[in-house]
Image (cartoon, rainbow, N blue to C red; front, side, top):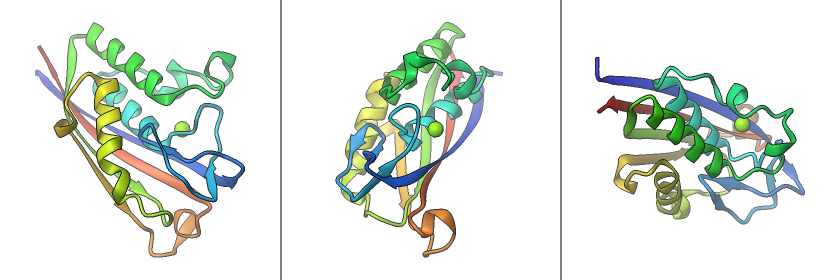
Length: 159
Ligand code: MG
């Protein structure tokens, strides 16, 4: 079996006084995401999808939030570490498809830049990453702008 698939999901609280970083792109908004690292919920979902596809431990186990090393960490650096771990096991990403659930702000203008930054961290091309942004129709924590969540699936192949 040369191909495997992984699933990632994450959610972070939206709060005032925090930066909103999604896929490595800082987005101007009145609120941002709260977390131990830079709280990049999309990068975290992509990282878990990659780790899962390779049968590696999850992001919390690989980069524990109890470790001061990861305080305020750039999540794209964690993603590139995960890509190195995947490579050591002989896996490389084929494609990654993501959904961000965010009521506000509108994310369409930032999706290309997010794909570029995520793909750079993964050592692949932006065409191998697809990002979709959805609102939650005003419902639930994402809809009420209390949180942003992200999901990702990643296909990897063994060379
Ligand atoms: Mg997270």
